[in-house]
Length: 173
Image (cartoon, rainbow, N blue to C red):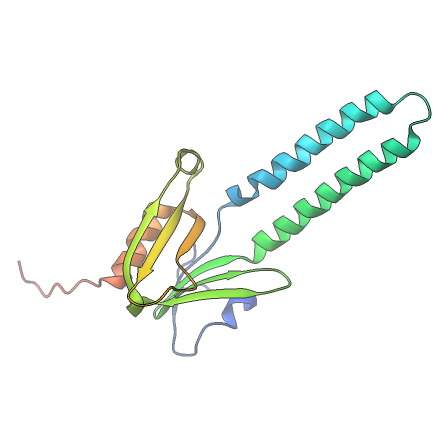
């Protein structure tokens, strides 16, 4: 989690000159659990099929099996590359979610439009340390309504709430 550090250029280009960055995090690596499971599962299946097709004239079948596994591996590398450029950013004015490697998507909601914000955590999210933010706004459907795989959800929730509802204590009790 960064507080005031310089945003990478992939994010910085979407910040306005008068905005200050307060929070910037990558989505939790748990977003990669399924691709990892697919690669390892595919490797196990490819290994078993290699033993099964290993004898005889099944060379073509073996090549096809390992090419299919290679496609799974390439897909995994792609998912990691996508994850590496996805950021959740909170500035002094907006909440942004930047995603995508080739087709860049930037979802945004002005802080002033957020009427309700909550987070939820699944059992897996509690075990691994991620959650999902649910943002609601007055008015129409927004481009940014849920943000999945947020690391440190309790901490980030409190920090964003502090920005949405700044303290107006002036020494009054």
